Amino acid sequence: MLRRRLLNSLMALSLLLSLAICGLWVRSYRIHDTVIRVIRGDLLQAFTMPGRLYVRLSTGNWINGGGFGHAARPSEPIDHAFRWEAYTDWNAVGIGYRHEPFMAATASESHEVSLPLAYLLLPCAAAPAAFVALRVRTRTRRRAGRCPACGYDLRATPDRCPECGAAPELAGAGT
Ligand SMILES: [Zn+2]
Image (cartoon, rainbow, N blue to C red; front, side, top):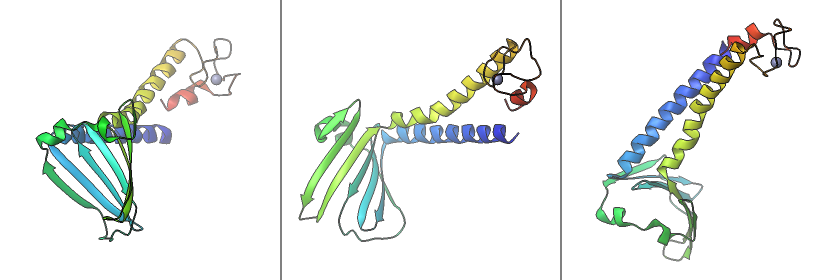
C-alpha cells in the first residue's frame, strides 16, 4: 500500500539521518568541520565544535565563490576548553545566540546560533517512535474489537465503523 510504503521510506530516511547526525556528533570531538556558502552577498557558515553545531550568518558583500566550501581540521585543546556559554548574548537549555555588531574590518555584522548536536536527533527519533506507537495502537485496537482508525467499539458492527466509517479490514490493511 502506498501509505505504508511512504511511512517506511520516511522511517528509513529518518534512521539514515539519525545515523549521519550520530556520525557527525562523534566526529565533532576529533574534527572541526566547517561548511560555508555565500548567499546574495551574505556569508552562511555552519561548523562543529566538540558536541555542538554552530550556524552563523554574516552580512556584507562577501565574494561568491559558488557552491559550498568545506574545511576540516583536527580539534585542538582550545576547542575542547571552549566555554560556549561565555560566548553568547543569550542562552538557555544548551541553545545559544550571539550577535556581533558591525565591524569595519570585515564590513559585516553577524548572528550566530548554536546547539548540541544531540538535539538534532530528537526530531529524527520522533518519526520512528510515532510509527511504532501507531502500529502498536492499531494492533491493540483490532485485538480488542475496536476500530483501528478511531478506537470505536465494533463488537456490534464488525463490518463498518459507525463512528468514522472505516471498514476495519481496509483501515487495518495499511498497518
Ligand atoms: Zn472508526
